[in-house]
Image: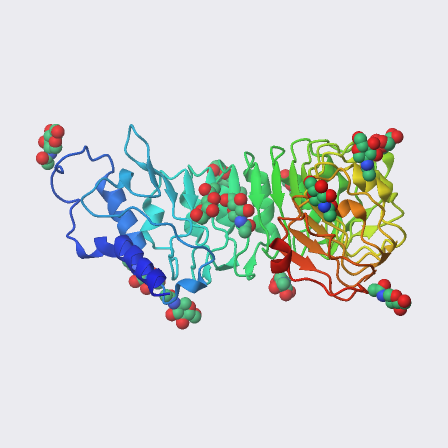
Amino acid sequence: MMGSSLLLAQFLCLLFFHSHSQPAHSSSNFSSSVQLCPGDQSLALLQFKNSFPMPSSPSTFPCHPPEKVLWKEGTDCCTWDGVTCNMKTGHVIGLDLGCSMLYGTLHSNSTLFSLHHLQKLNLSYNDFNRSVISSSFGQFLHLTHLHLNSSNFAGQVPPEISHLSRLVSLGLSSNSGELMLEPISFNKLAQNLTQLRELYLGGVNMSLVVPSSLMNLSSSLSYLQLWRCGLKGDLPDNLFRRSNLQWLDLWSNEGLTGSFPQYNLNNALSHLDLSYTRISIHLEPDSISHLKSVEKLYLSGCNFVGSNLDLFGNLTQLIELGLAGNQFGGQIPFSLGKLKQLEHLDLRNNNFIGPIPDIFVNQTQLAWLRLSDNNFQGHLPFSLRNLKQLSRLQLSANNFTSQILNEFSNLTELTELDLSYNKFDVQIPSLETLKN
Ligand SMILES: *[C@@H]1O[C@H](CO)[C@@H](O)[C@H](O)[C@H]1NC(C)=O
Ligand SMILES: *[C@@H]1O[C@H](CO)[C@@H](O)[C@H](O)[C@H]1NC(C)=O
Ligand SMILES: *[C@@H]1O[C@H](CO)[C@@H](O)[C@H](O)[C@H]1NC(C)=O
Ligand SMILES: *[C@@H]1O[C@H](CO)[C@@H](O)[C@H](O)[C@H]1NC(C)=O
Ligand SMILES: *[C@@H]1O[C@H](CO)[C@@H](O)[C@H](O)[C@H]1NC(C)=O
Ligand SMILES: *[C@@H]1O[C@H](CO)[C@@H](O)[C@H](O)[C@H]1NC(C)=O
Ligand SMILES: *[C@@H]1O[C@H](CO)[C@@H](O)[C@H](O)[C@H]1NC(C)=O
Ligand SMILES: *[C@@H]1O[C@H](CO)[C@@H](O)[C@H](O)[C@H]1NC(C)=O
Ligand SMILES: *[C@@H]1O[C@H](CO)[C@@H](O)[C@H](O)[C@H]1NC(C)=O
Ligand SMILES: *[C@@H]1O[C@H](CO)[C@@H](O)[C@H](O)[C@H]1NC(C)=O
Ligand SMILES: *[C@@H]1O[C@H](CO)[C@@H](O)[C@H](O)[C@H]1NC(C)=O
Ligand SMILES: *[C@@H]1O[C@H](CO)[C@@H](O)[C@H](O)[C@H]1NC(C)=O
């Protein structure tokens, strides 16, 4: 405890030491190295950094700051941690202050906004104390990357963001929950940011944005993150057909309807999360045959209409499969045993019945297996012993019976084991006992 606060104190000293030194940019050349960084930009950086008081408590930050190289007046700012310069002009073109314990309001008169040459700006994982995102961000006309996620911004996303027509990647996710993107701003953004390849808007309130306007986003888009955005209404199924889209994350938009296409899917998707939406899913042999590149598929709490669960066994490239909370009933699909690459399998809360067949024989990569809250009964499958990588096993709230002492003795990676609310007839050994 003492050790860590000492470390923190040292870190803060490093970070804020410069505030005690003399202004230096006004005068001559500095001793050894060539000074690349223009004085006005180095001053702007220092003033920006100084405008944030020391945080009262480091625990409010969503990350642990790494130790940073001293920002010290009189040294070339191009050598400072997080600062990147154009080697020819010396202009500051990159600023990565992600996870830098910046705390306080980011005002629109901040000297940050005088760094007009910036191409990449990362202010993620700081605490801007519910600042609004200033319209001044719209002045960074050279920006290709802007990351402001997990930084406690609030209010409206300014429509001026749409001026940043060179943006390739925009991250605004995981802010205060009070960050709002209005339809007019979204539509401008969709129209003007034609280079956009990555858009992270998880947790941004977009409840007034019409899902069909998502189709106006750049055709280059390959990452689209829209979890818990309050989207409502019909999602055009053509969104799933966009040929560049690899990563689509829509979980927890409970008002989102529409249907997952049964034919003519694009085959670029490698990550798809439709959990806790009302998008209807009717898996057909044809749709499955177009999902051959999906490695991470999350369809928990979904609106399944008459799908043949055996088809999941054909997605042999799957690494993660989440199907919790779908009340499927019946037997666990035997075909799941064909998924040899699988690392995570979540089948909780599905009313599955009967003994679990020996499907795990070939799943040597499986690390997380979640089977809680079903009606499984009988012995645990023998093949569970083959899962040498298994680290989390959740079996609670079923009707499993039988002795289990030996079942787990070969599972050396196991760190979480939940066997509660079952009918096991032997005292359950603690994990410590198992590991010895
Ligand atoms: C800085 O150094 C350059 C050459 O290295 C020289 O031409 C210039 O006059 C110096 N400037 C000052 C203010 O000393
Ligand atoms: C921004 O900073 C955070 C925290 O250091 C880091 O995790 C993230 O990868 C950075 N983002 C980019 C695009 O560099
Ligand atoms: C953060 O916001 C709170 C509530 O608005 C305010 O009392 C506090 O002074 C702010 N802190 C800083 C450093 O701006
Ligand atoms: C910037 O604006 C804030 C709030 O309007 C004000 O408190 C602060 O003094 C201004 N800073 C400068 C350097 O003008
Ligand atoms: C679109 O981008 C251009 C170029 O940056 C800019 O001049 C224009 O104002 C932008 N339009 C909107 C609607 O933001
Ligand atoms: C924050 O943005 C980065 C891109 O810079 C993205 O990779 C990451 O997933 C985002 N983090 C969260 C929590 O959304
Ligand atoms: C999102 O914004 C709408 C409209 O302003 C508001 O009614 C709703 O409560 C907000 N949702 C959340 C989760 O804050
Ligand atoms: C898509 O953009 C066009 C203008 O380019 C606009 O007229 C249309 O309303 C937008 N579509 C949606 C669904 O917002
Ligand atoms: C699914 O796999 C089975 C057996 O491996 C095969 O007969 C069937 O044609 C496959 N279906 C699709 C749609 O790929
Ligand atoms: C395991 O793999 C073998 C050989 O490929 C195969 O014959 C067997 O059916 C597989 N077992 C299961 C449960 O999928
Ligand atoms: C377990 O079996 C009993 C009857 O033997 C039944 O009442 C109970 O609902 C079952 N519990 C679960 C979680 O399936
Ligand atoms: C544990 O693994 C060893 C060797 O891999 C094997 O001989 C033994 O039968 C296994 N024990 C159980 C309980 O599966």
